[in-house]
Length: 162
Image (cartoon, rainbow, N blue to C red; front, side, top):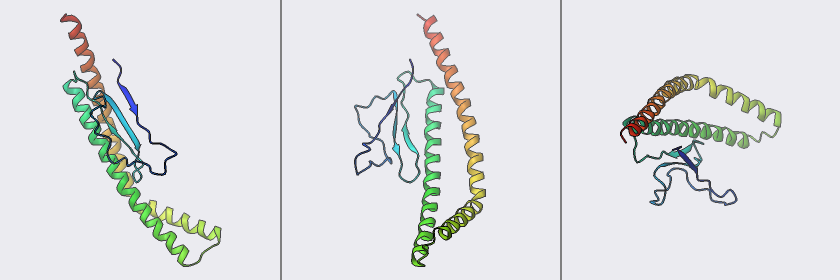
């Protein structure tokens, strides 16, 4: 049985975009499906509620829990990073407005300098995140292979136990 993914999108014509902070806790939702929310306003990460199979193996459960933990870690990282970037950028834009700078090329030069400085000052943070993210994804791939192997083994056992 293939795993189903259900994408719950918000109404794009609505003026109010629903918060992606929490997926619905609806009892009518199928428990064996993955649910994906709209992108979070700050982190830009789509939240995921991973489905649980009724006959979930221990390896599948470990994978589901680890994937959830990894996804939340990623969300928290980008939420913090994007909030920091947005607030610093907004202060700079307010400063440009206060100083009545209207020359497009001057504003472009200031923004280029800001972005370059921001990236350089956060280089270690970005590198650390990238290294941790790569390690976590390698572990996720390994756990996925183990979960697939356990699912195949369970299917074979079920066939021969009939």
